[in-house]
Image (cartoon, rainbow, N blue to C red; front, top):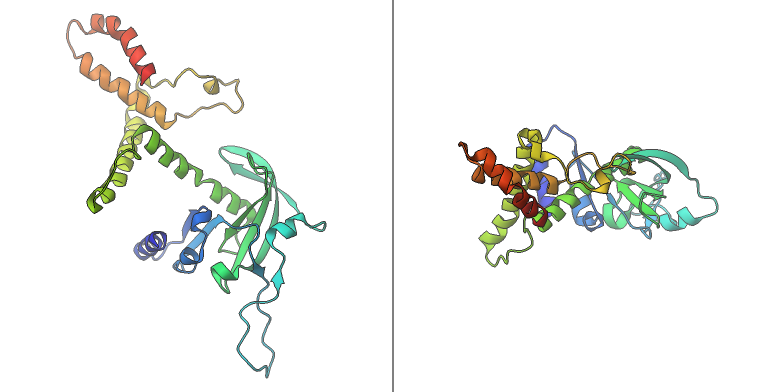
Length: 273
């Protein structure tokens, strides 16, 4: 699997560093978790109906047969969360640039079908922002605090927005790549363009007068929560305006007059784009 190969390559290049990999439910599987190198910790979404087990009991002296690899089966995370005896804790977490309070329940167990006999930490989360049902997250590090597991998982949202912006603003999903070379080049090229736009804005674009974000209600300090940082669409719009200005308003005696006459047209083009 490509994800396992990427983890192995990264761990090989950074053997003396601890690497944290965060993935959604698609990547929380045996192919990824069992194949990860020793210096990689995986955090992802687990299943509420996961078949989990207690650790294998200690082997008694003189006991015959093969050693047990797992203990007794435990109730699923969903069953434990809905039990009358469920023990919930209130935890403050910083997710999506907000400090919120959620209920958590921690389960240290063996998820045998995914991680074999390796002890993992499952965290059932209730009242997560924007979620109606309970969520369950997993970490291959059983010592990781529930707060850290939740906050690490929430950070992957920036990856989702990156792909969404690449598809919606840079045409990532439009090419019909039919050859192997085209497939290998399309995604890296659009992601490179995304990176160049962000770097340009951070270095130069943010200083331009045209870098002011769109006048929308969510940019108002009175809105809750208000938007204070530019989105990729704002960065791209700033680059577009700067490019137009460079092409149309070249240095010369008529530049100020031309700028004045073309300002309404550029405003309309900016809105249409």
